[in-house]
Amino acid sequence: MERDLLSKVLDTEREIQAKVESERKRLQEKIEKARKEAEKRVMQEEAALREELEKSVREAEEIAKKKAGDILEAAARRAGKLRSLSDEALHRIVIKYLDSILPGRPIDRPNVQS
Image (cartoon, helix red, strand yellow):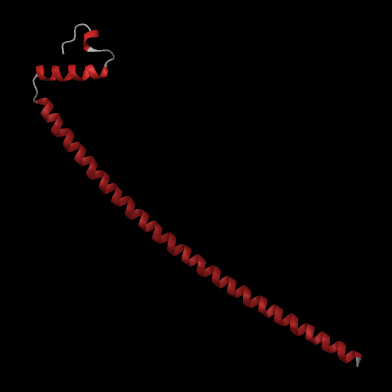
C-alpha cells in the first residue's frame, strides 16, 4: 500500500514536472514571438522615421535654397543701386553711419562734416 501511494506521488510529481516544463516551453515560445514582433515593429518605425527625416531634410534644404536665393537677389539689387550712387552721395551715407558707429558726437570729432 505504501509503495502504491509512493508510486502515485512520484507519478503525480512527474506529471506536474512535465506540465511545468510544457508550460515553460509554451511561454518561452510566446515570449520569443512577442520579441520578434516587437523587433519588427521597431524596425518598421525606424524606417518610417528615417524616411520622414529625409523628407524633412529635403524640405529644409529647399526652403534654405529659396531663402538664400532671395537674399542674393536682394543683395544684388541693393548693390546695383549702390553702384549707381555718386561719390558725393556715398560720402554722405558713410558719414551718416560713421556717426552711429564711432564713439562721441560729431562735434567731438574734428574734420568730419555732417
